[in-house]
Length: 259
Image (cartoon, rainbow, N blue to C red; front, side, top):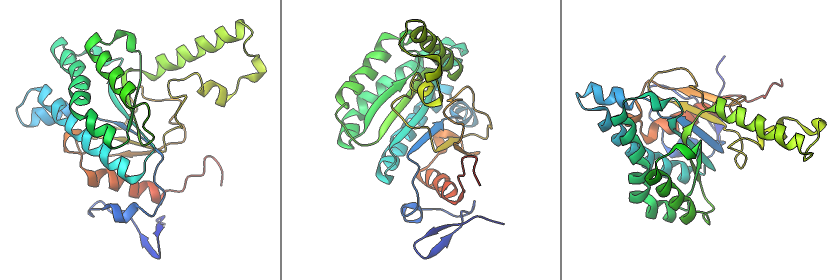
């Protein structure tokens, strides 16, 4: 039997063949935190006989559109998997280009982010990032720190296993130094040792390009997150795709292990 969600007095059921608008979801529960694995830039470029960098550049434009839409819908946080700890294995020319994208994006759109009341954050091992990349991100963080709207959280040089291991190391260190007792350790406390300590766990995870895996992304935080996968490549991801994902999220019954 299909689960439906109610919008006013109408019952709406998401359909793959229907184009949704903000009106279809605005009265339903909006995910507070959406995480996106932005996949498919390289394939998008290959399909057009373009260099992979062209796909990454096109994907950057999508980030702008989706950020504005999420902000307009009342989403509190948007976490984007921009560069993983494994992405260093890619050709140097591609890695160098990817490291320039945050600088280009934030330099170009920072005034717009400020106007939209968006607050920029970053999570990941920042020590390995090039100086120009880190400087651009730190400037955006600094200049949007007073904003109170959507948190735009970039996962840069991020890997969930590394995050968890470092969290355990810090927790053990605090325990050895007497700052906490073994009996104090619980899920809530451990979450405070992770890079998302200031954010609630994602309500909705979106992965584009047809791949169905997490790729070392927020393994702890996604325990009860709703997953939504699409074959759409990230550069082709449109506002209606995000709305469609939210429409499906709204029809799911989130029981968190209960009945």
